[in-house]
Amino acid sequence: MEISFESESLRYYERLYSAAFTHEETTEMIVPDALPDVGGVLMVEGTALLRGKEANTDSLAVTGVCDLSILYLPEEGDELQKLSMEAPFSAVTPCPGLTEQGRAVVSLRFMNGEARLLNSRKLLVRTEVCISAGVWQPRQLEWNRECRAESGVEVLTREYSLMPVTDVTEKTFSAGEVLDLPAGRPEAREILSARIALRTEEMNAVGSKLILRGTARTSVFYLAARGETGEAELQMPWSQILELEEEGAEQRVEVTTAVTGFRVVPSEEGGILAELGAVAQAVVRSRRSIRCVADAYGISQDLDTRVETVRMETGGEILETGDSVRLQLEAQKSVGRVVHVCFGMGRPHPEDGEYRTTVQAKALCLGEGGGWSALSGRGETVCPRESSAAMTAEAGEAYGAVNGRGVEVRVPVNYRCPRWETGEVRVLTGAETVQETEPGEKRPAISVILTREGDSVWSLGKANRVSCAGIRQVNGLEPEEEPAAGSLILVLRQR
Image (cartoon, rainbow, N blue to C red; front, side):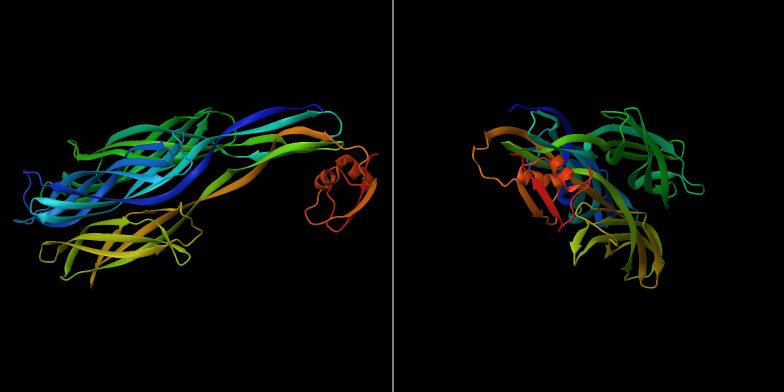
């Protein structure tokens, strides 16, 4: 018996890894000669910058740098001083099954920084970074769309509507602009610290191009010309165009951005010059409808069939929900006012059936009679909805207010929890004739079968080696009708 197939294939990406992990780095720093001796460290702030990501055999390597601002008081005097430092880091996470052909989407978040005096000219600096990564490996799904065979072979054909990941792409971009300070704010003389958060606000697919637009929210804490401090929240627009592998198909795109460079300085015009380098990373899902041969059997001859079941992502969404945490930062002396608040967030971790995130906050304060101090505290927030190991947490702008015991800090938190849908595709990869039925084999011409849960016309026909059309005709079943469990089915075999 001659059997031949008409085959097709689909290139897609299988998700191998999706999680967030933390990396800690410790390094020493020498105070530059131009700055005074360190009397006491007040706080450490930073931005995590992505430098590289590399798919290796069974592991993902991520490199970056923490751009740090260390605020301190000198041994003599009470004017705020700033140390700038770049603390490089390199992290590797296991990823079984990954090869150099794999692709990764990575984002970084500076979690926490601490500096301890070794002496007045040397500091021991510790940084923590949260690395969120998704890793995809290219795969090839091959299936037989049509089966050509002589009479006596039954073929099961199925149709699937899938939405697998068909492209993982990225593009670097830059943006720069002089941003005006809000009315009434003093001009900046020196930037003490700055934070940046990128948000994608608009995505439009035009042909094979994906147009992205968003904003870079920059939080600036600075020294003014007359020695006072100031803060400002500034918005800078950004846009980028990504090339997609195809056009015209139904698509869903998930975009992740990572900062690769960040510079904020006072401008000559009196505002703030912000310069940004970043990478936009896109995971693209495309609608695919495939028709494939899922199974086959012979009526007069045995067939050796090879069937493969492939699991792949067919869709997904990201659930977002908010929470907030209130922290009481205790003070030994009365606080006059809160000048600046910084915070660090840990990685969401499971505990007692919930996902919790540790929040640390520091408040830079001036006493009622003058003098700088830094208060610190720690608390937890709980994700109030469904969560997973791939969940991420981001904090909004913290707010601090003086109360009778010190400073109360409120930190809003936004949780993003991915949820993916997976499906199975059953495909017949091959079939060969084994042998003809031996002459004289005793097989009853008529059988009556009591069906069980899960029985179908196909399974009954395959088990008894009769045609599905014959079962339907004898039992009066419609083309798409299946027998109910517990019913009697008559099976007639040809002699």
